[in-house]
Amino acid sequence: MSFGSVLRDLRLDRNMTQEEMGFAAEIQRKHVSSLELGLKQPSLSTIFKLARALQIRPSQLIAQVEQVQGDPNIRTASPMRDNAGR
Image (tube, rainbow, N blue to C red; front, side, top):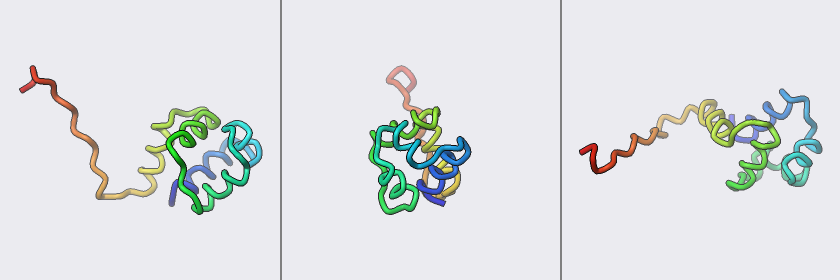
């Protein structure tokens, strides 16, 4: 699965058309289609717009993509330590 398939599943879970998603995210329906088909990758600002339209946080959208991709090369960042924590 890819970003596009996650986006499509989330959109359909909310019973939204591509037109409705585009309107809610303030992007063109054609762009929604291109994202869902994997023809384009979203910019950071588009991820924020899509998340708002889906009524989720951008981090939730990205986490779902990471979850379905299951990339073993993705490591979570270790917590930052301040100078007092040395």
